Length: 422
Image 1 (cartoon, rainbow, N blue to C red):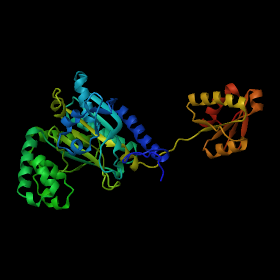
Image 2: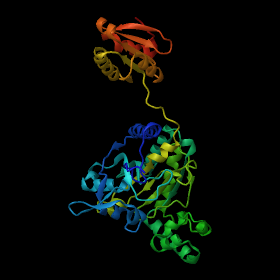
Image 3: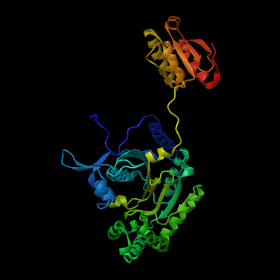
Image 4: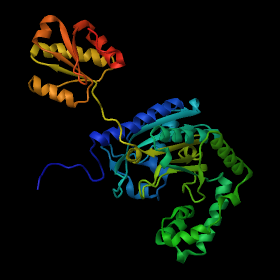
């Protein structure tokens, strides 16, 4: 058995199609976020463990079981970030960004959770993240949802994804609803699954998203949040629905969609698919007006979402692989030097160009033909002596000599459909 090192469990190496799919998701995200005015934000890959303990809760699975924690050389308890929102909230408080609110921020990068790897789920995974900080209006919720919808359309996967929507109400709504839900399940404690019995004592609303088949009948009979809406909460949810309709965004109601932490308010949403098996959520978020105040900052309304890059990459159609437009074929040392100057000029002109370094002229031309390039540029001793290059159309076989100083312009013209002209 080989003693060569192997990647840690739950991580991945990518080249070729996998890397191209990943890149296509990131590129689409960056195109779309700029259309919506979301600026880039960067936060550390590691933070104080307290950042996530305060935001996610000490008893959550993420904090109690899944965080990669370590003590640094200064003796401080640190962890690799398991999600983005808490770090962004910490940065908002620490840097006084409330002076800039409302802020529309976006980021992407690696996150880390120690959990059982499975299809679409890794221990080092990647997410896209979009947040609006400092906006209490339902229009902000519409904005972030529209950004997510547009991203899915840009990736060509919107027809396989459904937006599901619910409300957590305002604090008064949530408190009354949570008490009613707790009373309902408490009356049937012995009929609940073991996990749901634990949640009944710590976070009864989480029972509503139980996947246990034995809990399904009790969940179906649980009180609905609509019966507990205050006037404010009802008006907010109605305004959100009208905004989505005006934006041309279709959605379905999922009255069992919840967020267990108390700082969530009003909208919660998920874009889900049946194309990935159990890992059906590709993008999810909601309004978390209580988080920044809970972390010690000023009371600040906020709404946002996160999306799994790996899951989105699994949905996208086969992306275009990096392609070569021009293959430069040089034979001899002097020709090789001339080729370097030509390659530089072509790339600065926005032309994808490559040079094969190994083999004789025949081998190099074979590789040029297989590269997918439209044109080959031949440079040998005769071309160097004459101050020219030979440009060959790899489709028709037609070729012409072109002066060195005119080569880049001639190639650009040919690729634009202008033909080969001597």
